[in-house]
Amino acid sequence: MSTSTTAAELEATLARFSGTERIYRQAFAGNVIQYTDGVRYLAETAQAYWLIDVLHSHQRRAVRLCDGFQLWQLQVNDDRSAIIECRADTGQPAAIRQRIEYTDFPLKQIRLYVVGHTIMLPGEY
Image (cartoon, rainbow, N blue to C red; front, side, top):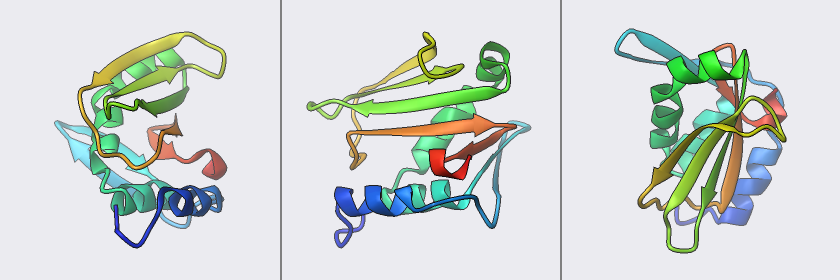
């Protein structure tokens, strides 16, 4: 993360994203995932393009298990390990769960949605 941006500032900026003006595309092995301005800002500011890669890597299974709407949550632990989970909706059990050995992600947690192969912040939904 940029040394001039604190975690609190990042959270405040992310909360201001509403809708998107542009859709970005990432292709890998013939599969395409798209993401919004807010997700791009998050990836650039937090140096977390890996987060887009993680969601992208699970899309075949997530599309099958979550029926059109995916709620992803990354939870960073005090030891800097993390868990990322995908649910069909709030209150539903995790359909996908991946442990991350180490991350320097600056926030304790973040939620992202995937709808129609597009990753977005909750405010952009």
